Amino acid sequence: MSDDNGETFKNIKVLEDDPKSGYCYCAVLETVDGGVLLGYSAGGTGDECALNRQRIRKINLNEI
Image (tube, rainbow, N blue to C red; front, side, top):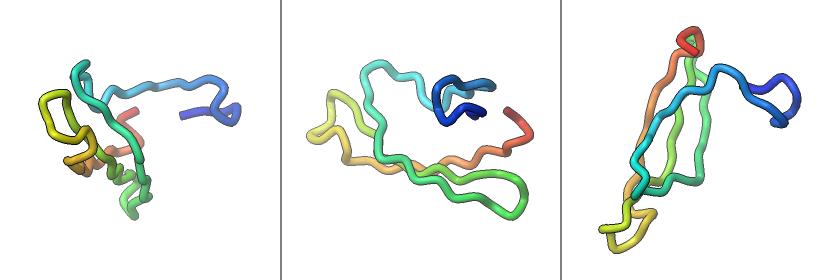
């Protein structure tokens, strides 16, 4: 989360930590229960295309 338009961030939460993979094109949707859904493309170096997988994660904002 950022209080200064993305200059700095606090309460950082690591969602993915595989150094051989790439993650991009994140979409964010707020949920009615105080969380957010994150949808994004993911892939690794062994894949034909780095963007061939999609993931959806739910994060409760009170956890970060």
